[in-house]
Length: 184
Image (tube, rainbow, N blue to C red; front, side, top):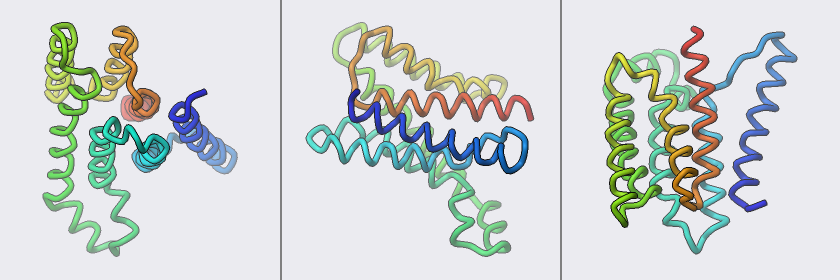
């Protein structure tokens, strides 16, 4: 088993162990999606560290996950008291981080799928257009399915990229979060 696959599997197992401990404690299944971005960030950092010679393969995904962690309101609960936290979350800073995260998905698509050859150009542009469609309000729930589509497309194209295991973990976490949002 490759290093990146093992690292992603460890991240998934950590989330499953945490979810199981919540189930044992509370008696119901609760998906801990606020911690998904942190687990993914650690998985990507460790994968980058283990592939020092090919660290550039992880930079777009590392950027997206860093911005996702910064746009997660849970991040700031450790640093701010309650009144400052409420004032901060009402401000524009989190929205700016979310917009930057959205913009950084486009280089991620182009960098992971590739832009050499007509097939990869068309696929990259089609995935970028599909991602833009998931940002439109009636279709915004499809945003949780987008990375699953990206991974399936990369598997279909037989595209080998070092960040695929981390993208699979991202797709699983987004599906779980989307399922939780759909049921609430």
